[in-house]
Amino acid sequence: MISVVVPVRDEERTVEPLYDELASALGGLDEPWEVVYVDDGSRDGTHAALAHLHESTTNVRVVRMRRNAGKAAALDAGFGLVEGDVVVTIDGDLQDDPAEIPRLLAKLDEGFDLVTGWKTERSDPFVRRALSRVFNTVTGWLSGVHLHDMNCGLKAFRVDVARNLDLYGELHRFVPVLAHDLGFRVTELGVNHRPREHGHSRYGMERYARGFLDLMTVTFMSRYRHRPLHLFGGLGLVLGTIGTGILVYLTVEKLGGEAIGRRPLLLLGVLLVVVGIQFLSLGLLSELVTSQHRERVRALEDHPSRLVAEILR
Image (cartoon, rainbow, N blue to C red; front, side, top):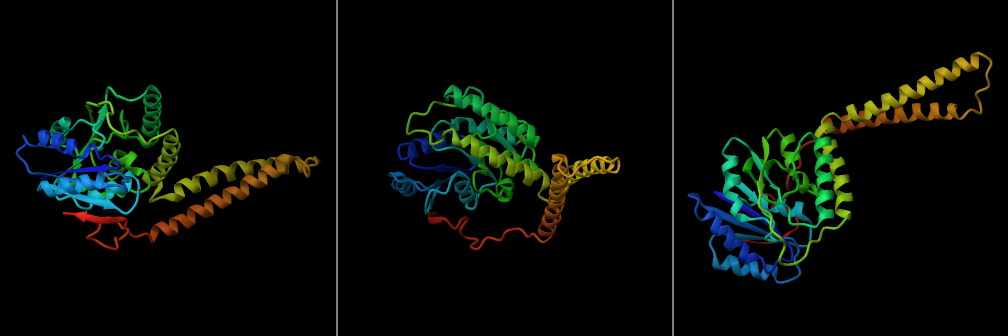
């Protein structure tokens, strides 16, 4: 079975057209399919449209969040309900083309675990395209996962990937990085991207500032989650070594008869040594916490998220 997860927010006009396009794209495949819509706190008639679609079809399920929790939480809630062997994610604004899904599935059959779309001709303003290119370049440089379009909403992956992802905050932007860190094979495929005809984008310039902070989180979690002492201890050793070198130099000066009591270099040396020790201590404490860490256990296994208010099966 193919499970399509669609996070939506205030997309009343696109709910049924998207389902029709999904039916057209997936109906020709010799496999059953389902759609899991996740209503992320919509305030218009989106949920009513989803309820009507649920009543008139047999392969649509609806998850309604109690409030707007963000795309990552919405995807996480949808992943908890999928029944398919393959999961497809697609945005609900109709900019992603459902006709591309069979190509993603074919690429998945080549032995990959996750195939993400690459909007080769992106139908967005120039500034957004330029910032996105910078963002993808920096992300590839820091994470080691070099993709042209890290945050494309159109993706296909095996259900094992969805089950092992722990999405929160705004980590949905880094699904390929998180999957790669878990050992899954990741690739990309050029897909069609269409202009937005309904609604408006809710992403502004602050999105990229938050994305940079999330990138720091992902980089730390992927490289140093199980060895934090390598990060904090490394910084501590570098700073401590520099500070010690400065103090040794000043000691030699003092033995030669020079006055060092009022030299700013003395304060710098002491400061670097103290900060270095603090970083080493922080690294050791982090190692202690990591050694006792246990995977988070969900309080309610039947409910993929505590923010879920209603599920139409």
